[in-house]
Each structure stands twice: as C-alpha cells, then as structure tokens.
Length: 238
Image 1 (cartoon, one colour):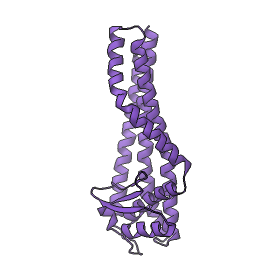
Image 2: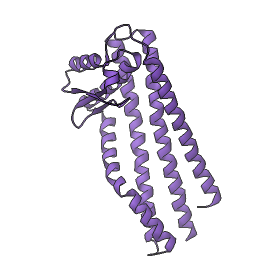
Image 3: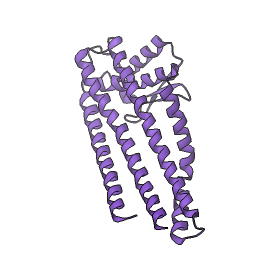
C-alpha cells in the first residue's frame, strides 16, 4: 500500500474509533444520569415489558438476565431478555431501554422487512466471518511470496468482500434500531408511562444509544476501505 493510501486508510480508521469512543462515553453518561431519575408512573421495566406484550397479544417470554445494558430481544426464541437492573427499576433509562427492546418484539410480530433483511445479512456474515482471517492470512502469504500468481490476490479480494458484508450488516442495523426507538417513544406516551418532560429525557437516552450503531457502521466501513485500498495497491504492483 502506498504512503498516501496508508495515511488515508489509517486516518479513516482513527476517526471511526474516536467517534465510537465518544459514542460509548455519551451512552454511559446519559444512561447513568437518567438511571437515577424515577418516573412519576412508578412502573418498573419488568412491568412495562409485560404490559406491552399483553397489550399487543405477543407470544413472548420475558427473562431476567445478568449484566448491565445486556437487554435484548431474541427473535429465534421469541424471548425478551431484560437485565436485572432495568427489570426492577422505574427510572427513565430503564423504561426507555425496555421499551426499545419491546419495539424489536413488535417489529418481529409485524414482520418488519428491514428486520428480516438484517437477520439474513447477519446470518450470512456470521458464516463467512469464520473463514475471513484464515483466508486473509493465506492470501497475504501467497501474495507476498508470489506463490500461484493471482492466487494471493483472489484470497485478498475475498477478504475484502467479507468486510463489505460487515458494512452491509451494520447499514441494515441502523433503520431497525431507529425504528425500535421510535416505537418505544410512542409506546411510552401511548401507555401514559411518562409525561412529556420524561419522554424528552428518554429520547436522549435512546439517541445516545443510536450513536453506537452509527459508530459501528463507520468502523466497519473504515476497515473495508483500508483493505480495499490494500488490495488495489497490490493489484497495481503487479
């Protein structure tokens, strides 16, 4: 890779990591800030989850899991996993996070197409990612040793395609997460769980979380461009 290409690729990666770091810090600070602010309704995260599920008539099981901000919806099992911290809390942060995960459950129930696309892309990415690093290493060795002519380049370009899938997976994740947050805010208002001032604070929590998904997209894009530039430079060297 030439000097200019190396500088460009490294700069993009550095910027992406800085954005990711800032996003993580913002999430932690915003979540921590509003995790100590109780809602006037007094409803806990666990109670909210059950209320949403029962109201929508969903066949979803609610589980309490360990960890912090480990909340997730498992579509393959039809289970809503809520961290014990958020399950037992009636804070703005807890209800916002729980409502967001319930948003994913509603997406699944309504066969939300972007969610289906995301699942398909992630499944494909998970399968091919197992071969990513072995192929990349073999490709580099072959290419540097000039074994098999274009063989090395074939391996390297295969790796580039795998990184492209990572970009697509992260790109598919953004609209799904934003939609889940939008559904969450509507539910919090519709069920009268929060008043307007509390909803504004909850929106800050969800917006901060959205930045982490954007950061993941930028990082995957930076890695893709870095290896793409490397592959192009190796191709030009020949």
